[in-house]
Each structure stands twice: as C-alpha cells, then as structure tokens.
Amino acid sequence: MCGDAFKLFDEWLAEARASEPNDPEAMALATAGADGQPSMRMVLMKGHGPGGFIFYTNEESVKGQQLAENARAALLFHWKSLRRQVRIEGAVERVPADQADAYFASRSRDSQLGAWASDQSRPLDARATFEARYDEMKRRFDGQDVPRPPHWGGYRVIPERIEFWSDRPHRLHERRLFTRDGERWSEGLLYP
Ligand SMILES: Cc1cc2nc3c(=O)[nH]c(=O)nc-3n(C[C@H](O)[C@H](O)[C@H](O)COP(=O)(O)O)c2cc1C
Image (tube, rainbow, N blue to C red):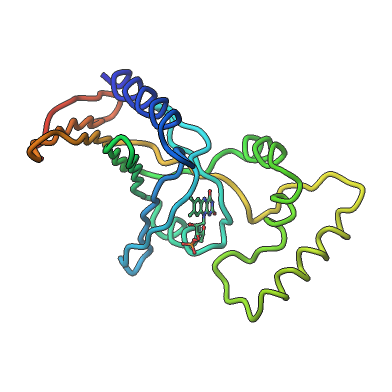
C-alpha cells in the first residue's frame, strides 16, 4: 500500500516535471512553533521516498526555530497545469550530516557562499550589507572548497498522511488518502 502512494507520487511528479513551467519540486512547508501560530513558505524538495520528503535550509531561520520547538510539518505541492495537489503531513527529523555535506557540495559555489552570507530570516538593514558579506565570504574561501555552514542542513518530513487531490468535472474532485499507522499504510477516499 505504501508502495502505491510513492509510486503514484513518482508518476505525478514525472508529469509535473514535463508540464510545469518551472520548479515542479517547489512545495509549501507549514510549521508552527511553541506558540501554535502556523507559518508557511516555499522550499524545494531535494529527495523523497518512504523515508521522507527532504528540503535544505538555514537551521536558525524561522522555520528552523519552529521545527526545533515542534518537529512536525505539513507540505503541499500544487501543480497548477495538472490541476492537482498533494498534501503530506508528519514528523520531522534532521538529515544526517554526511548527507547534508554531500548535497551542499553538489550546489553551485555561488549558492554555497550565499548560505554563508545569509542570516536567513533575521532583519537586514540594507541590501548592501548582504552584498558586502557575500564578498567577504568570497575572499574568506578563496582558493578552497566551501564547507557546509554549521547552521545549514536538511530536514525530512516523514509522511504519516499523503493525500492526492485531482480535479474532476463539476467539482466532483477525487481525493485519495493514504495513512500510515506504524509500518502499515491504508488507503481510502474522501468526499471532495
Ligand atoms: C520556489 C521557492 C523555493 C524556495 N526554496 C527554498 C529552499 O529550498 N530552502 C530555503 O531555505 N528557502 C527557500 N525559499 C525561500 C523561502 O520561501 C523563505 O523565504 C525562506 O526559507 C525563509 O523562511 P522562514 O523565515 O520562514 O524560515 C524558496 C522560495 C521559493 C519561492
């Protein structure tokens, strides 16, 4: 059953890659910290499977702080050209350091320097300050590989619920819900 959900996700993602004008891997990430106030933003999915849906970010950002307080999240893909959405919910864990290192090493040098230069989610007095920090990082790592910053890493949302929504005529949309209880997945339908 679990295989069905991930097979279906792979099929839909493949179709989205063929049809979306950009970023078919973009997903909305909802988190809430200890105060319970939900917060959302887009991130890019950088890996997926039964083990989780992975994204990378600054661990000291708002989302990082909220996940430190409450390690649960919801993800949403909306593939407009296909008129489909996928909703995923579950607990969140950090990606192991060696996996984050490997992904960081695969990024462009400019993105690596940007990760060092950005105090993500903190107030910035002027764009020039950020650019100066970026230039400073360029000088700092000149002639050497850029290591992964200690505050930068990956998270995986380990799915407990995955819902596939597809548009149907007359608003008789289809909703297929896969839920996990321990290792066991079950599937059902929801009224639209
Ligand atoms: C399409 C898209 C993809 C994005 N991907 C990422 C990402 O993978 N990681 C990330 O940290 N921010 C990404 N961002 C920026 C985030 O939406 C957000 O502005 C930033 O992470 C700060 O969020 P926070 O203050 O809630 O932590 C992306 C934005 C867009 C529009």
